[in-house]
Image (cartoon, rainbow, N blue to C red; front, side, top):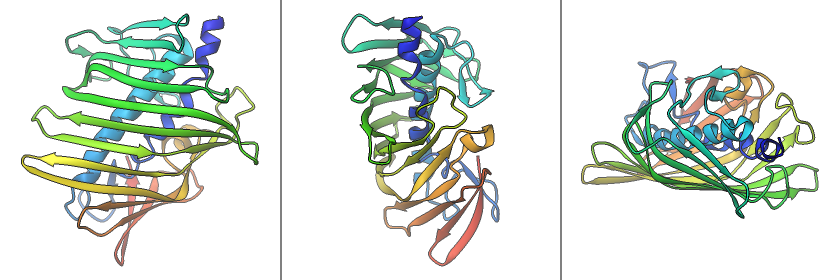
Length: 292
């Protein structure tokens, strides 16, 4: 019981950070054909979405394990059970310092309940409870792959304690590279600090609300060509966990995405309403997107 309580608060709020750059990229435009790429032909948002999706997936699994030491009912967004890993073994070492949690999918592809193949290990180190000031959580990979996309890099989160508004504050950085089966790669480095602006004094998730800020940049290769993009949160992105539709997408905030050599895409998530709509402005053109 003590081990479960120690792990319970480690990971669940970290999930939203991986989604910081994801929601705008997994989108369909309201005034064009359905697509997961930029309507002007730029592929970097879709590739960035691949990296951000990997990070979200890893954080969600660590959330599940930290909450109940199991992956049999792995939930990625609220009450929607979307995947599980019956072939994964879970090892928790609470004696070492920092403590270590390992999710091992084995050395060959394992078909999980979400119909995605995984292999290799996700290794999570933590120095204390998620809510305790000073706790550091790191996630790394050992021969890890999802759907034959090889993953390297790290995810770091540090609890920096309370600010003057009595909000828990966190540093969050990640640097991930995903190598596709065809040999092309996508890398992304993000620095997205966040504040737990409501609900950190209670044990329920339903009153939790987070504000995310920061920047990211990425590189993608396509054959011999390499391209770059940058991203900046210009107005804090708000994640509200009060209901399934709220927690699935940001309800407020503005994110700028600038592919190399192209105009900035300004994504506005609205004024706090829980829905799956956002607007994108490119130059003097604004259109509505439905978030995936």
